[in-house]
Each structure stands twice: as structure tokens, then as C-alpha cells.
Amino acid sequence: MLKVFIFIIILFLLILGIVLGVLNPSAVTLNLFITQTVLPLGLALALALVIGALLGAVVSSLKISQLKWQLRKQVKANKKQLNQIVQLKKESSLKEKESRTFSSELVHLEKTG
Image (cartoon, rainbow, N blue to C red; front, side):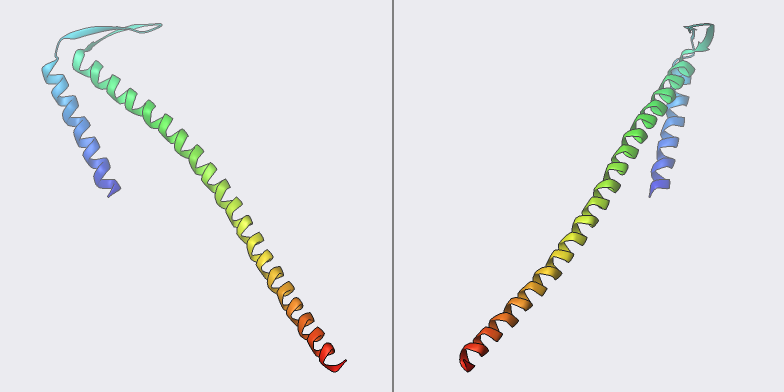
């Protein structure tokens, strides 16, 4: 499913690049910080789209990795709490058994004494 999704995105970007190149053949000058370059308008638009998509992917992946880390941390805390609950239930059942045993011994002593 993921491969199909990626294929569709790549195909869409290729078609978009071709359409931009055909519809915008005029040259534009890009003034960068240290240099100037002349590119067809379609190529400049396609480059801006690709760079924007890459920056968006980087930001998204950073957020996703942060959320995965938080999830792992929470799962670890949940396991710890689950172990504590199990331990407390065991202790509670042992105390309850001791209480029933003690009560039955008291009843037995009252009957005999």
C-alpha cells in the first residue's frame, strides 16, 4: 500500500513538472545570496516545490520521531504500573487469605473454648 502511495506521488510530481515546463518556458533570474542563475520558470517552480516537499518531510519526520519517543516512554511507564498492579493484587489476595484463615481460627477457638 505504501509503495503504491509513493508511486502515485512520484507520478504526480513528474506530471506536474512536465506541465510546469511546457506552460512556463520563459527564463527567470534567481538571485541567491552569493550567485545568480537563469532557469526556465517551470524548472524554478518545480525546484521550489521539491525543496518545499523535502523541508516538510524533514519537519514531519522530526515530529513523528518525537511522538514515537514519547509513546515508547509512556508504554514503558504503563508496563511498570501494570507490574505494580499485579503485585498489589497478589499481596491483596494473600492478605485476604490470611484474614480468612485467622477468622476461621477465631471461630474454631470460640467453639472449643
